[in-house]
Image (cartoon, rainbow, N blue to C red; front, top):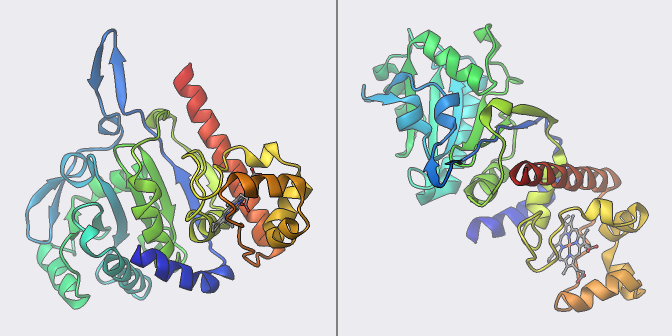
Length: 324
Ligand code: HEC
């Protein structure tokens, strides 16, 4: 809970934070049932290449079997001779590693993969790690250029111009291979937010229905609403995960009058004071915990509503896919 407290303190700072992030989700089926026999077939095995890579100690790791299989991972692409954006990203990842603490190497595995493998030998990577004081649980990988290109393509992070690892390149992915949830972020994302996703949403293994990797698709640009929701709302709410301190918010955007919803997010305290019938009814139902006024700006409210709407839609689609 320590990091959550820190997160809450930070949340004022993140309020004005404008991310440039992109979000996409690759989803996969975990189980395939063949007649009466349920057989575990992780479809990620079919989607991701199992190419050999070398870590900083010269040990061979296969990308699917050893690097990602069944794990929650962060993966970024870099090269050691890179001018200014890679060191910035490495420093940011170092911050993430520190925030994750003991979770690194157990609940979350961190990898940096060189896009300049000819130059970045294991020894070069090891020296780089020393320079950046990279702790255990975070490995640096190199390999054959074509194999690394293939991994990047599969993660949707390929560009044939590598001098392009500039400030705006999206080089950072995190995912849960078992559930097939993957997200891409740019290096400017707030470390605390990324940690909240890594230790929160990505740790769930309960996403019952997931389309196969083959049907992976971009879900469009990442709503800043997600960052807001994680930092401001997840202490009390889930979307599709059941009631917490406050009600489950799946489908709430289509259930409620838009004007009511906007006003509720803007000034719940005033509405409770006025004894707005719906709000007051919820207040009585949810243990008389008043939802706090979070001083949300108009555009933040808009982003939050958009985020709640879209994640409900994704959940509904997944559920429909399962029930087919
Ligand atoms: C401290 C806990 C808490 C936080 C933080 C919180 N809520 Fe709530 N929320 C509640 C409670 C409790 C209710 C039920 C009404 C009440 O008791 O005030 C509620 C009700 C709601 C409702 C109305 C649900 C319905 O059925 O109409 C929405 C929408 C909502 N919250 C969205 C949010 C969003 C979005 C955030 C983040 C920006 C947020 N809440 C943050 C506790 C919280």
